[in-house]
Length: 170
Image (tube, rainbow, N blue to C red; front, side, top):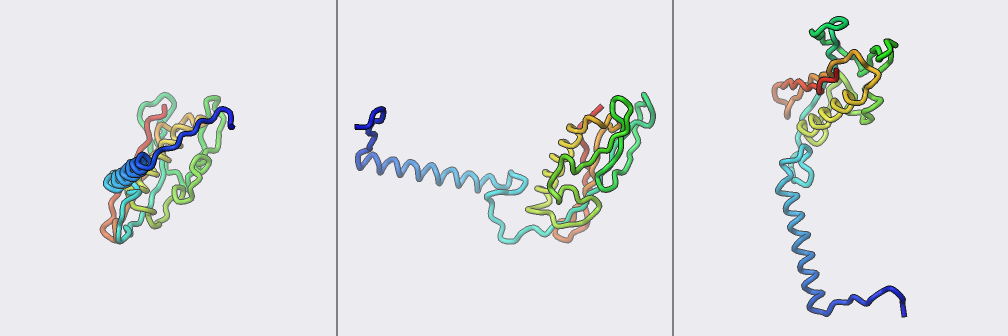
């Protein structure tokens, strides 16, 4: 006789009702996922007979103060996602977008490529990456905010430019 275990068996009809309840709950969860797919940026669990054929390109820039103690800012382009900025001690430091963002499609600046899953999903990923880099670059005491200019061409239509910006850092 096993010590510490009890025999928890269900009768035949109780087992049948448990299966029915589990099956109904499973189908309801799956239906909820399918119905709410349009609300998610990548439309996960949604069905699309024909995939979106959008392209996307983006360029990174940063806002820096025009001078020490100045309130006005200047927009400085950031070629290839890398720049140099002074830290709190005044030492010049190298900062790279790719130190925080490891996905190659989120670091392909000034290049046009297919928007994986959809342009909306790629915009959501870029926004998250922009906020992450802005929040996790403590050695950069010059950058007020990071900016992304995103050009999207939905299924071959005219390009649309969307301007994303991180929260103010300083």
